[in-house]
Image (tube, rainbow, N blue to C red; front, top):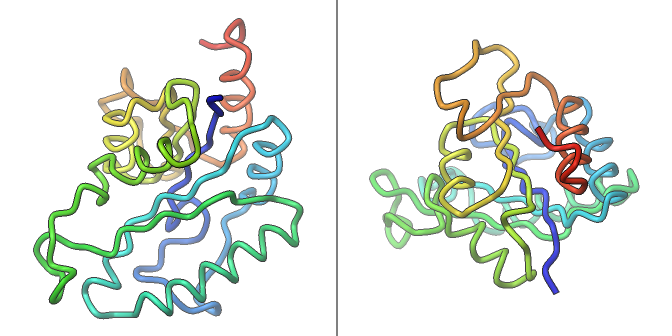
Length: 189
């Protein structure tokens, strides 16, 4: 049985992107993220985080540090009655990774590996799912994977040129309507 998912990038969508965030005191949740995830949960979406974490590959922090922060982040959502169903991450970097992390891996966005892995493991219907990211690489990963609606969170940018392939939103609140519309095709634009 296929399920619908809301895919979220982490840095810049869940939290402020302050560059290689791996400590709790540096992790600042974006306004509206708990409301958005609760709304998605209510509508029956699985909520899946897909995040590049090149800070691991570059040696800025460890897999253990990332896992500790992720466990805390998931617990914060749970305490807010919002469920993150799964978190996927890519620690590799094709040019700046150290040792085993120096790799052009299929899981690193803009490649679709994390999304496709989630679809296999969680039985997700990508065509009825939604991706929210704050970078073009997030949009490319969603489009390549076959995600039905891709939303670029870009509050301070002018509309971008690839609007035929994805839509730009200026706040997480704007995503609410897109989630509801995906479930009722009569409402889709």
